[in-house]
Length: 436
Image (tube, rainbow, N blue to C red; front, side, top):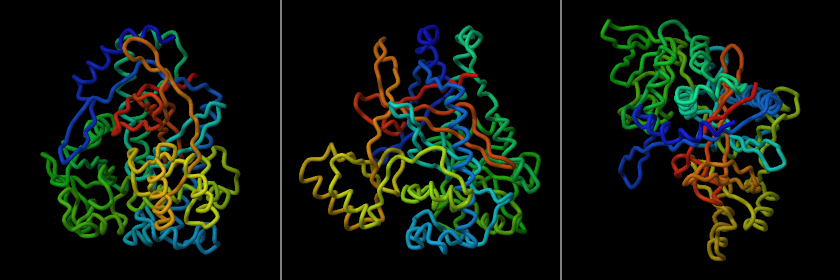
């Protein structure tokens, strides 16, 4: 069903390059842009599989939003001993500046990027939750648009759920929390790794693409300085991290933030998408507690499983990790993009000892997980299909209701035997077909 598409792989990548479908990375102090390599063999998810994934993701994101609302107000989950107090408030993602602020509709994570893998027995596992500024939705969108153009026959003959509604879903989400005014997307600028996505999403949601120079706070209201004059902003989809969002509240040296934005937000005069402070919920250590959150807030059993995870913070788990490190994967809770991931099996004796000492000394800094032997998907390499590890980033949008986009970003490793699929580590991507 995909032979027709395979013929056009080079054409698709050429068109993506022409349209500027790239991502950028900083390496050794230098900014480099490169093509995000596309593979034409799609990941195919059955209608039945997607129904379970959808139900499980809605459950999970609803629980995470309830956790964020709780942790910045009553803190009942901490008082009840479900999540340790010292564990939450030592998280680098916890922001005291967000205490007592409840965003419109009580929604904190409006766009959640949830990373999953499918094991070889068919079970889906959640690897991590991305609730700050998850990126990647634009790539399968533009890939589907181009592949439809070069091979319309493929999409006429196969019953694939249309994914072109992402812009509509995103606009509905922004509109649902907008407190009065226009929607804008805040980008740090041309040299950001995901600038292509920022501009693309602005276009498909009919939002203004802004930098901090075009936004100003006056009388506790946020305005966009357009060529037609100032316009009030009701919702701002920010694509910069918390630290740089407002130099008056966070890093004073930030040149890409908006002075006094947090004052406007606290007064209820603008919605910030995603809310500041979400990092406390997508901390890789807090991930361990999400199944407990689902039971605590929703009184339900989790539909989707976490990967088997151990917290060295707990003595029993720490002992297990030290005794079994050579067959586990260790993750630094404050790293992202595939950085800070260490497979015990790759370490020599001296490195194993050093890692055990580090985990013992800095036990809040790490989690350890069993290595899930997740599915290989075929990719084309030098004209022949070869198996490579692949994950799936699903996008969940929360406004008046929580919805899962019937598509997603499938990322794959281009190195044989590598489990790291991130674009920043040289991975590629493919389209994700949900069969209708």
